[in-house]
Length: 424
Image 1: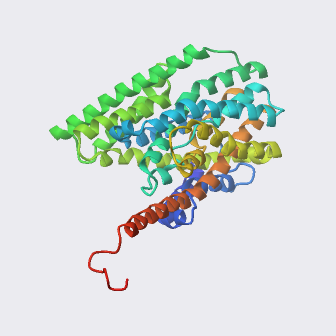
Image 2: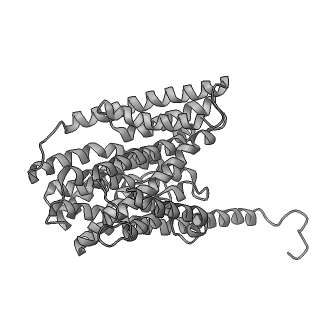
Image 3: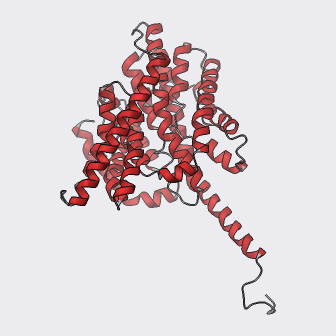
């Protein structure tokens, strides 16, 4: 993003900060605002502030942003509470996620018939992971049952890391088919090694960062306000160190956040203050990524728009996500509305954007690649619209159900003491 667009972007961020509450009460979310602004203002075809985007740099920025969001989300998870509510996220990850990937691949082969099967696999894998950032409004709303919020958060934090080796394999295979690459180290062994390194590095860096922050707080070594910078550095460090040893950076960031939150929870009082800078930094960088997404990828989706693209996008957000969740939740005794909640709140966001940018960077801009990227982009745009608009009403519905439950219990207990026999 050049300096010429920095001023309008800063004004946009300021305007959002001032009216964000009013907009969100009308179901207008930050991602929606910044995607639209990027497409309208920074598109190099018609925007007044065209952005000269280098795909590699945007890809790096998007990856770091996703890592910070994953670290911050994980650091907020109460692991003791997670142990009591581990069934739902485990079922989503171990049953629902593989089924989503397989069903998405089958649908892509049938609907996107012009794509090579390798690019169909790329589309399915890029759209399999869900986005914790787009679920933030629901995850943070206490009207939604806690075990559902934990399930959505943990699933979103881990599934993008789990699917990264599949995306890498799909891009490598597509590169061979398109004649623009060669097959590098892939396969089950390579994927497991990446995940293992990610877990090990993330856990190690998370422990070291948490111990350092805790010790400094106890001894009074740090300047006021400096410890949150240490938290931010821990998140970036977990991601970067993992990548440097060929591990999975996203898994490292999420595991690092989990471990950091556990250790700091045990040793340090004010955890929210420690993670606040990381959360704010991730949120600001997310706005940048959404803005660049609107400028760079939305125009591709518009140019490549077709019935097949829109049809697959709608199918990906509904049947491809919801049917595997229903199957994964079978036997849990979960109420139908809760199963539907978990099935619907699988928004596609930053991880899908990262994978789309990686595809363009690795495979070029041939017609099949642009078609695949357009499908991913269309799905993400629809997700931003539909999930953003439905988050508030769904949370409010849970609040109404809780209120009805409380009133129902009160009525069964009879009238309040002192009003018996007074005609009430």
